[in-house]
Length: 70
Image (cartoon, rainbow, N blue to C red; front, top):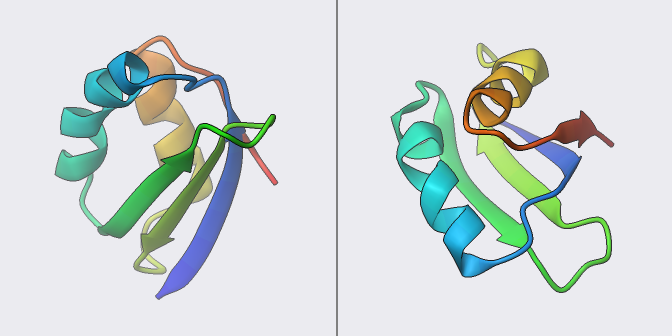
């Protein structure tokens, strides 16, 4: 398992609710959380090594959010 971190524009509970189904259904994610108190709105994902950062970025982009690996 690896931990991936992304700078995002997920800033509130409504945003988290919007991305939750997509992230929960993404195969390979063990756990994820967004620190909305952090100025960079950091998304931390614990995932299997088979899941790439670009898959997570693409999933968020499809929901209308930006993510940049940090």
